[in-house]
Amino acid sequence: MTTSIRSIHGFANGIVQGVCYRQFTQDTANALHVSGWVRNLPDGRVEFTACGEPDAIAQLITHLHDGPPRAHISQLDVSDIPAGSYEGFRILR
Image (cartoon, rainbow, N blue to C red; front, top):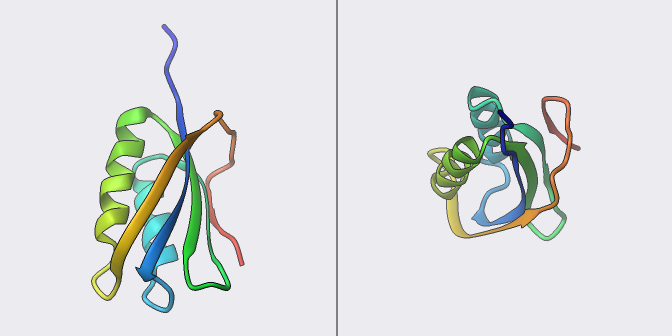
């Protein structure tokens, strides 16, 4: 039996820097056994890539829409990408 994997790439817009959004993303991804990375962008957005079980990715997307308490996500753009392979979930600097 083969297990399907879903990989996504996305951007979070709004109040997403300086509010622990990257740490929230990493903690949530780790809890869901999702691999990938997250980073701040100079334009104020947060960029992320994630790879994992389709249900786990769907849950991650739901959590990223909500974000941590101090964040305000005005837009979350997510697109599917070719399957990737990552070790763990990292915060890129």
